[in-house]
Image (cartoon, rainbow, N blue to C red):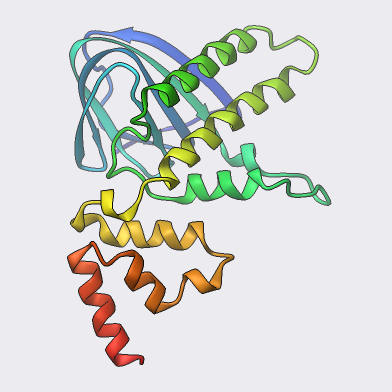
Length: 220
């Protein structure tokens, strides 16, 4: 399978297409995919989703994907590497770094578009418009700071939408992924990671609750 390489820390690729010209592929980078207009099918890691105007997808380096375009589609791909959440030695973690790191390390590809709310989609697309304009002024003062701040704002909105999804909204065959995501969200809250608490949270998922019930009997 072909692997695309990003030779710079950041890149924006905005284009229109009537047919998808790329074979299924992986990347060496992260990628936020905006659907500006159009519709079709997006296949991610073997999962198939309909896409339409306003949808936003987030892919990591090991995700593989491709599109089938039904109607002419305008895409915008934001490509970046993990330096977006790294901070220099001695620099204080302001909180957003750990949230972004958790977002980028959380498998989310069985959910399709990460944002369902129309207003949240509009916020992201508004930020995208500003980011694209700023990207044309890469020699302007404070360009890197402004660009990175806009990108991080996008990622924080994506994190808010992904992490606000409740276990009840997760399909049963996706229960393992839901549990892992919950653990990552509450990794610094041990009281929320006990077997009893996890069983209560995921009781709506039959496969999961049955598994926890067995564990609880084995570990009273």
